[in-house]
Image (cartoon, rainbow, N blue to C red; front, side, top):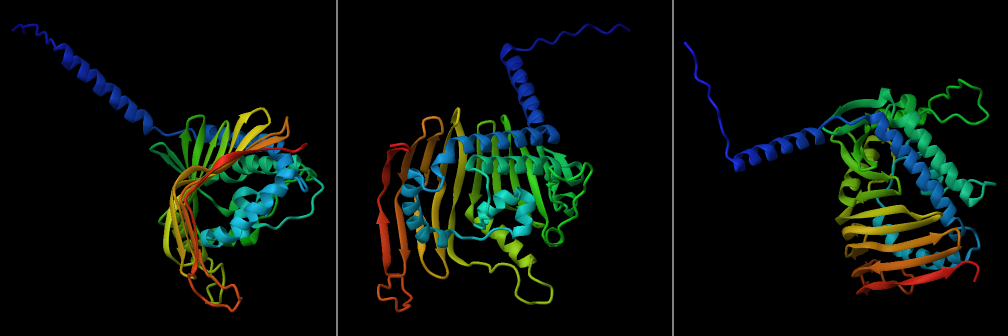
Length: 365
């Protein structure tokens, strides 16, 4: 028996639909494909070091002691932080854990504990950048920490070995293996810290996840021209609460940092360093989602979303800087106690409809 030849002819529109469906399936498959963790993290480490290095060249004169920009910015930023910082203070990981993740140089900056140094401002930036690159390549994103790699995300579970081993110094003999920092190891044993790594253009997005529920503490975005931190305040608060609760001693004595309580907590903020030219960088702080922060201890801050709220573009070649302000509607409440009687109230209100503009500064003028 001979079977007849059957020819199936599809309508052009149907062929087009099938083609589009195939492309869609391929796109979905590509999107969910495993990343190459070593390639992504090594590239991110090099980008982070490069951005920090360029920032030192660009911003060095603006933050040098006695500089014009420092004097002008110092008084205004101190006044603002004295009002806003207490309301936004949600705590941070303990020093030993922080040092293992970002290095001693940056930890000093973040905790405000400055050690005497003979390094110039530019050299201190290079020190931070070098430590970040080495930590990412030698202590954080290593094979022994890689927990999973699927769906376009690589998960690294930070373990005491090697994460809690300090980086070797220039004077250490070849093959030196530093001992594990026991306080750091104890902290990581009590609190599971993971980093979710995703490919992001020419860089990566790395999100720090805390505890069994993988609560988001902070996201770090690294591109060839930018290094940024993004913090969702309610999520970061929940993650930080787990850290502080888990690090309390087993004997019931007071330990860890006190867990701060809030009546209201909403908003998302972003801090960034972006290269905009040779030795030219913009340091910016933005409110990505409107802030509404009201600690149980009193006071409050509401602030409309604005990107940026403040940005300083600094040019190390011309030693000039431009300050850009984009403060949206802001309401700050607190205690009004002009006689210093210790009265507890909510009688102080500062309402700002908005503050916008640019200010150019020249260091040599």
